Length: 115
Image (cartoon, rainbow, N blue to C red):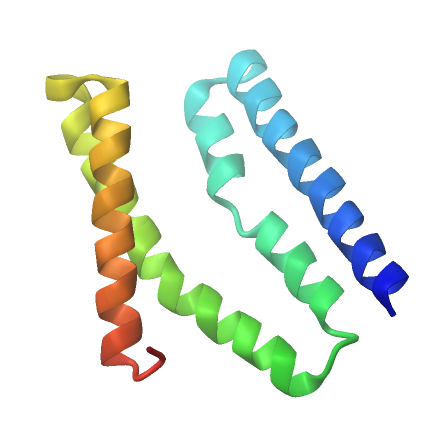
């Protein structure tokens, strides 16, 4: 069983790294907007859910639910980064966006009764 789990983790890690590299490559060669589009697509999430499918239907449903609730935090992360970057720079905006996303995710999960 542990080997099966590690196989899934390794596949997810490799595919995730490939998708990040692909988004950067497309951003550099085609344009940053297109790279951002690839980076924001739920391709990696889809692969993770597909890899979790063999666990159980309930497990996969919980993965989808957790991802859906977390995407609200991702939206707030991106909004904070987008509006903060011009004024505060990348590092400060990124740090603030992470805090905003984390707080948003906690609030959403609390409202959903998950924590």
